[in-house]
Amino acid sequence: MIVGLSMGLVSDAINSSGATGADSTLFGDAIAWTGWSSMYLGIFITGIGYLRTNLFPQWLSALLSVTSFAMFAFLAVLNGEQLLSNGENIIPPLWMINSVVLVILGIFTMRRSD
Image 1 (cartoon, rainbow, N blue to C red):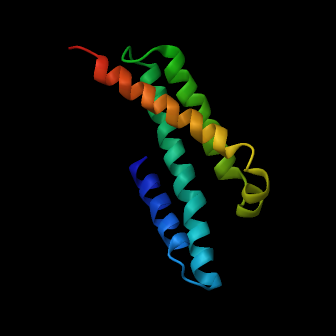
Image 2 (image 1 turned 60 degrees about the horizontal axis):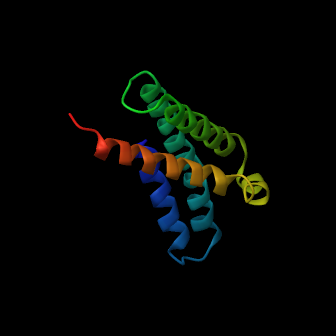
């Protein structure tokens, strides 16, 4: 998960650096889809681990697993052009659901008493 996040951040830095040329865009895009899909695969595996424990509600762990696997599959299967043309309708809702679930998991963690 951490490696995928790091790769995604590097690709975003390359793409936002303002460097012109096909090479920088090509490198940034090649790294981006691999990095972000790897991160969501890690989140999916983490969600499966949460399902096997009693740390969080089962429905919340299942929602994290399902949405992160859908995001992983979407990013890993489609190429860059398909993601740019079709991803505008699917990527933002999946990203938002993952983010909200992770925030709720954080709230459950902070409220838990030992």
